[in-house]
Length: 456
Image (cartoon, rainbow, N blue to C red; front, side):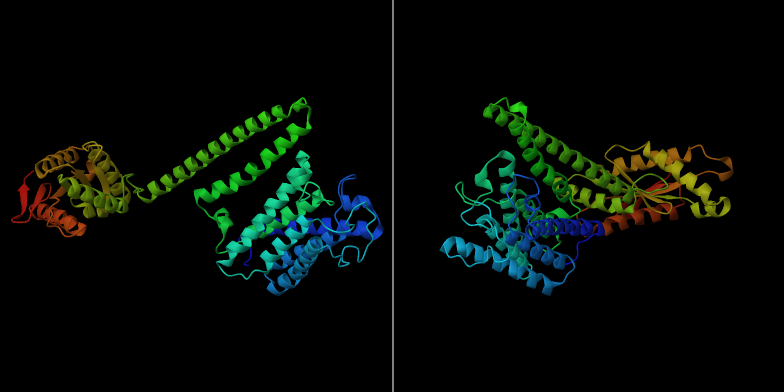
């Protein structure tokens, strides 16, 4: 077993192991010095047997060795706990007394089998020992965690049996001569939790340790979903609220469970909404140009692929406009990059005023911009380009910067384009043609004549 993934988790798991070991030590001291209250923790409740406390010390030590990644100690400490549980079960099944129940201390309690742990405790020792002794192969992790989950379930039954006053749940059988102590069930549950929370490459509990929404929801909801119904049910059945009517207790428990379920669903929805909002923000930041506030080249490539697929599917026209600021390098060199940045920001706002909601406006790089215009044939794209060019030309700028002009190359998607890059190259060729023809103009790419020049 590898180390837990985070130091806080390691501390919590170690603390749970220490708690179990401390409870076992207190019970052992109670047997050694003849102090019954130490074996039962609460006066009047069932005592933890000496063999049970000894088994808990062995299992706590084995789990501590697992947390510290000492496989040899893990096996050697788990093995005697398994033997203890197996011998006790043999005694119950065969009716033969092996002499292990009171080998060290005399149990004076009125019981058919004094000093003997319950059959349920013996089974639980076998479950956890089996989980600790199973080899640490990937597929074996499912077996190990299945055993630990069975242990958690049986110990939960015992605790619930005490809370609701149902002896059959902690005595294995309703007429069993022995009963599991409440703190025995609690110790089994704590050890099962520790074992399940140790990270593994495979297993049922792996979903609790991921960054996904499902993992976060499981971590937040698992323990409230288990604890709240048990605690509320116990309060209802043992408090004056029940008014002596079992049906009222059942009704109160059902209503409380409904409230809990609705609260968990609401919490799950809030978590999903928060995660989706954070992911959308990260996605938007990753696909937005910081200077101009419009989409960047990454978003352009994704959107172009999507629009090309849609144009192929429905046969609708698709135009691509590539815009370049004329003599922008000269302007930058003369007036500085800050002035150039302000000019680019102002230019993008002017271009946006000419676009439809369906158009995708992106900064391609430097002083180059691209517009993806869905459902737009060549003539309509030329009209859009002319409007953008005229608006930029008439744009109010600092007089010291001089007149601002742009050249625009336009390409319309054709099936003979083999790749998306061919489409981009066509628009770039049209832009080059506009620049060589004198700048401050728009040109439409044509595969025959290379371009159609519409003079400004």
